[in-house]
Image 1: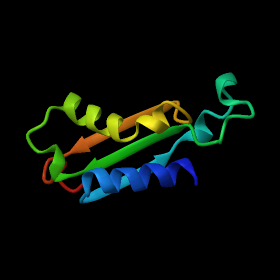
Image 2: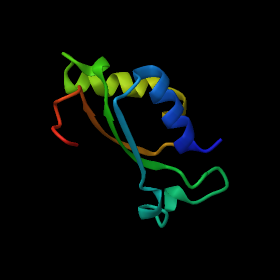
Image 3: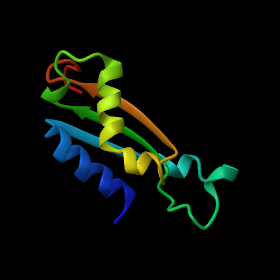
Image 4: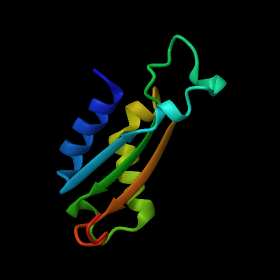
Length: 95
């Protein structure tokens, strides 16, 4: 299974998000020496926007920790960089 699909499935189960957008930014970093090699799946850099009621009343740091916990396996392996935009419903307007 592809890394992006694993991210999607795990975040949907963990947070039942109102909105989930996963952007695979790996192509922007493919030229980096650390991104080359047999173990590299080609999916290493992601930007995730997630809106979920699970984040209501939580600080930005707590929200990020929640996402990191849900994606612990991927962060220990194929993911090299993960940019997060987390919000509770209504916090980002029409984002």
